[in-house]
Amino acid sequence: MTSPVSATAGACGDGVVAARHLARWLALAATPTFAIMALLAAMLGEGAADMLCTGGHGSVLGGMVPMYLLMSAFHSAAWLKVIAERRRG
Image 1: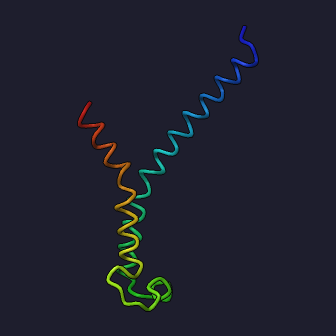
Image 2: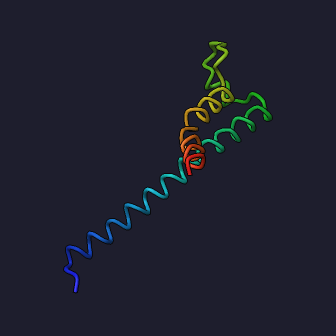
Image 3: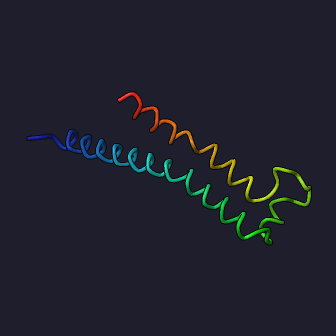
């Protein structure tokens, strides 16, 4: 018979494993989501939201498309980790 403490520890461990699994999938979903958003922003052109994000400075990195591309690049670490794991094993 298991004590309540050990039963709770086992349930908590399962929750941690599930949370880590969910976090990994969310991390993998970020890169393609931002890439799709960049593509849509480029196809739909400059709208009111794009004007708000540029702030009127005329910067090359201003606007929604570069922002989404940068966010996609910064979130690509999860994909690089998956690729590295597959090459090892």
